[in-house]
Amino acid sequence: MDRRLPRLERCAVTPYGRGAGSSRVRVFQWLDRVGADFAVGSYLSLSDAAASRLVRHPVSLARAELRLAALANARPRRLLLHREASPLSRGWWERRLLTSADFGVYDFDDALQWDRGEGGLLRRLAPKAGKTRVAVRHADRVIAGNAVLADWASRHHRDVVVIPSCVALEDYTPKASYALHDPPRLGWIGSPHNEACLQLIAPVLGEVHRRTGARLLLVGTRAPALGALESMVDRIAWSPDAQRAALAGMDVGLMPLAPTDYNRGKCGYKLLQYAAVGLPAVASPLGVNAELLARFGMPAAGTRDEWTDAVLALLGASTAARERLGRQARQVAAAHYSYDAWLPRWEAAMELGTVTS
Image (cartoon, rainbow, N blue to C red; front, side, top):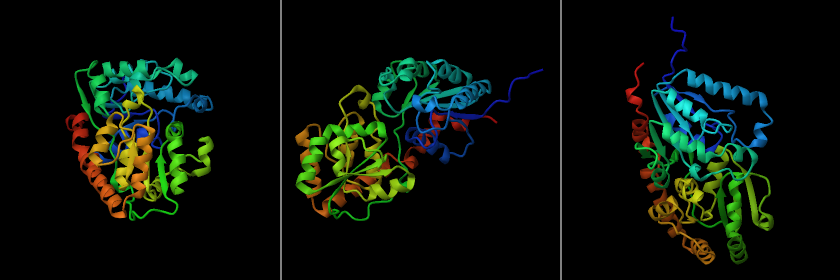
């Protein structure tokens, strides 16, 4: 008698729940669009896997590990693994899940292969670099968020496809007015642990504030964390509704990045969000950002002087010039970085049409 569990047709495994940007963008938004049912395992369904969160949920942690075993035992016909299966794994869960499936796909959107455990005990005990390499080698196909990630993955796997992180333009309120606010509103959106990037251009922000009175609107967290910059900062906690209204109410978006290998692997999502709204922006031309800036017609800034000049130039441009720039960026985002544009290729990468019931 065959006592094995019934097989799953389609399964997606994510380290975070829908509230986390990475899992929402790379997994849940796709699943919302495909005409196929997926069983989804989202570990603790939290917005991140920080050790401070995990230790507060020991029972849930144990249950999450048991769920991974159940998913592997169900031997799914199609499996999508995003980033990592478990923050505790050193590669064993990633290998077991991907090899349990008839067709296992590994998806990643950050330079996890260069994340060797800096920043905390859990990250040192289970660094992402090792488990990412294991996942790439044991997947049947790898989906990379950009060419930098794909180039690395191609050294370890022969079947790698690039599908960028996409935006759903219907989730963003298009910018209706390009007349500057009084005072002007510089803007940034992101998670609390990335907010420190703004310190890279702190002198620039101070100078622009001195010259124009501009304030800095941050969408992501309400906790003050930027020291002297806080005197010019206004904060909004992230939510889908807050995101829609806040981005459309900015005058210039910002995306500074430090020139690290990890940042070179980023997928430029802040820039894509600004473009989805039609918001003019300035960014560091690092990794895929250089391509996005060129396509959107937005200024790239590497040095302090370049940042100051670029931000002041956008604030000093005519309303019509800012509107042309913003509308062009939104059109490019719709044509080249939207879910609608990439859905056929994502479905093909997952080989959804070949699953037998």
